[in-house]
Length: 89
Image (tube, rainbow, N blue to C red; front, side, top):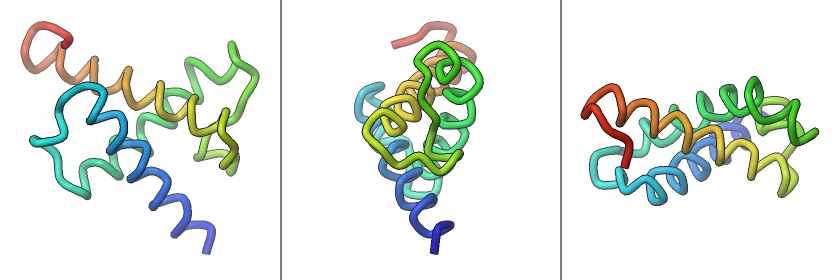
């Protein structure tokens, strides 16, 4: 059951990040889930030690955990846009 919640929350985080970065029309549901989960891993490495909060990958489904995961997904999409287009949006 925890895996289902993890996938759903990863999809929500990826979808919100794609809305912020204006890449929602280019991504489908599967890519939103991947962006949310990989972004949470990135947020766990970069932001979690600074903010003192866990991510959704670490089983923290609180508001602070979702915010750290969302920020990680936004950073991931910015890096992808930078590599693909030569600039971040």
